[in-house]
Picture 1 (spheres, rainbow, N blue to C red):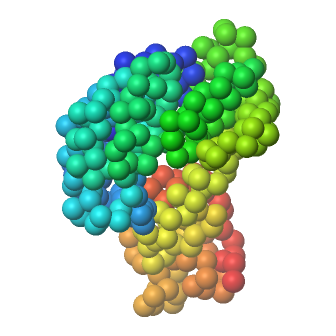
Picture 2: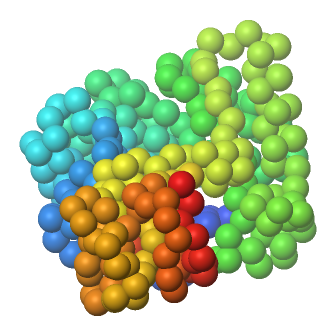
Length: 312
């Protein structure tokens, strides 16, 4: 995910963007702040990515930057590198659609917030871009969202993504003061999932040809994010690391505790310590620790466990 800017003309009360990004013109790719093109390319390569989603804020607040990025990524990774872009459509018109199309954008996902968003949608539908609508589901909005989907079906939209309304530190208060409740897991708003299921059943009963998908907040946390971590772990695995459920682990021993285990391919000496994989040794060792980290660059250590015996 390429967070191209936090700037946005909309003020959606449910926006989950963190305070260090919201309404600020900053650029991140996944968790990495982008200060140069190399930062962006390195993260794409390390994550073994086959495409990128350009998001914000509203990316069209910085249209020229978006165009440069699309052209650059396509030039480096090839025409099959898939790029989709999220926007509310507040700055989308026939001119900007044409610019994005010529730059090489593959897909545009529009968050419908007003009649202006629908007009933007109509400007995009006649282009070569795949046009998708992606909206969060507010509890109790079944009839209005089903009505919207019927209109989208008539217009010729390819598909609709319905997202469970997520809760974050930045939108928590705004959600509560509007009378919504938060599910016990703290991830999402109570009733959002149930409303989404009602919408899916209504669409099915109406026999609409448009494809409608529902994405639970739990799926994003437990599947999408963990799979992204796994790909990055595979892409950046060091010789002394094991990969466990998307995290990296290694054994770290103080200098002088390894004795005869420091031989080729069994251990690496780094920063005055010996680092090795669990599977590299079956013998008992001295004082040491198991380190568990997120597969970021540099690694973000999550836990350290005392070590008595290396697992086989």
